[in-house]
Image (cartoon, rainbow, N blue to C red):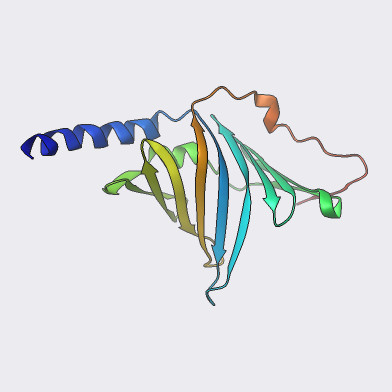
Length: 172
């Protein structure tokens, strides 16, 4: 039993190190959005992210949608309504900085505060399994991951949106 107490801090420090060393991440995801009336919407898809600040969220359910995040810009492509929204971000939303600033709160649980938002991160078997937070509308968001690939090589062209010429483009 005493050996466990000596090995546990070593194992936990390795987990935190794996968060800090995260260079890329890919996974299937299920995102739940629960409002103040306890109504929940579920979204499913695939996410790819790579340092320094590249991400692509491909939503398959309940509607098709691709969201590209590149530094200070977000491009949302919605094929079902043939529309593209291009937004400038006021600040850098950086998935990898959130991971690097996470502090352990319990076994397999970490918290990070980034841009005044508290993120709860869960790790299992050295893999990111979920991120939870409250959004600007006070909705509870939980993104659960499966079939994770960490630190695999990702071709950066994946993060370049291809906007169909016949789609309406709205720039905000």
